[in-house]
Image (cartoon, rainbow over all chains, first blue to last red):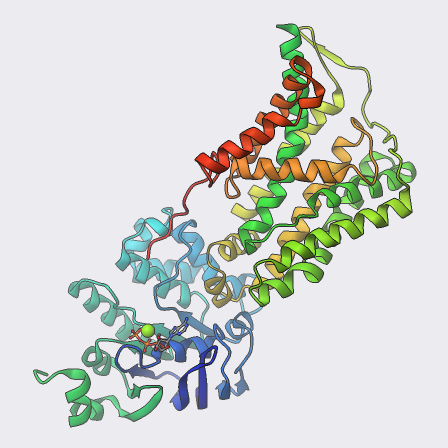
Length: 240
Length: 290
Ligand SMILES: Nc1ncnc2c1ncn2[C@@H]1O[C@H](COP(=O)(O)OP(=O)(O)OP(=O)(O)O)[C@@H](O)[C@H]1O
Ligand SMILES: [Mg+2]
């Protein structure tokens, strides 16, 4: 579904990604783990067109999207729940969700049943349902995270990119987030998940990739990575 | 007392015109953090195009034509003067470019319509109406109603329609709006188009009361700019109040002190606001959680 070949990208003269390759098969959950500053967020930004890659190819369902504008990439079905949530603070929760389905409401993507999908989001995230008329900026951090995920899902994506959905959340909420991701996985949503909680991410994922200083240093079935001594030492801590 | 009420009534009409032009400044500032310094010229062009068209079609059919012209003119300004500056994150590029385009539009207008002031036929009776001894021109009432209706229409569009919400989303977080599939460059072009459209509309509202002509834009654009600063570049409510404050102080100063000093209180107010409350009287910090 999503095939990245030799992707490089950076900011101005600073190169961050040095030719990474990565595959996300349809219906699978792939996780990208790595330490702070490894380039995880940069990878997702290059995929969704927030920054322009300097080299390589990004094939989304057979189309090379590398260098396309982010709105054109979204129209092809790539949804991105970005780092820092980035919800529209002065708009209501309901409006944020509607904007998630902008491509569907304006004919750029198949419309489907937007109303039914809204109801699904409210069922998946009951807290959003209670707060649908509230300004998104007044939500708690955890609620904003749910909103960012739900908003991305409203695109009806072919591929969903999630950048640290557990960031800044209390442990109980982190569990909830991973439970939701597992549920989406069951529903065949194709996902690329970037996470700081490597152990939890490898638990729910099918495939894992390890990113170090802009290069992929290990990849394979998530279960195998979890037991890989080098990965355990670097990302999972001795206790696991 | 009678005179005071009379002065306030005329101040309100002038103030609403300032307000609606200032509203146009807000529209482009919201989406792109840039302003069209040729906003006064957009008003002037709208008014002159209206002057030509109204002779053929009458006032009502002239209105949509002028609105369409305003949309187009604003889009041209954005494409020629602003887009490149935004792309290269140039701080001063758009300032120079929109001023330059304004001057070009003014010269163009002088060559087409001449330098003299032209009389714009009034669609409403020119005999004043009397409310408790205060005389008000029917066209002054139309200015207030028209200006409010225009601002209300834009607000309703922004709040109710999905395209309006896309405009607001672009204003709040341009990158995140792009991720929703919103073409944010197009939204910025659209906000320029809308901004010039409100100016053109103000032009054909005010022209029957004042006069029209190639030089009518400069002063109005400048005063509306100080209204936008006084009212705050982010508060729709603020430009109405700011416009009224300026319009009324002007007519009062013009009568009680001297028409020669008519522009002073507004400028003093502008300086005061800039010193004491730079975000504008009604400006507020946007709600943003990190
Ligand atoms: N907007 C930017 N401008 C310049 N450099 C940046 C920018 N964003 C990130 N970088 C740099 O790029 C490198 C990779 O950052 P990135 O945000 O991709 O890391 P990350 O793996 O997501 O880290 P974290 O786990 O902390 O989120 C870092 O060295 C960072 O300083
Ligand atoms: Mg990151």
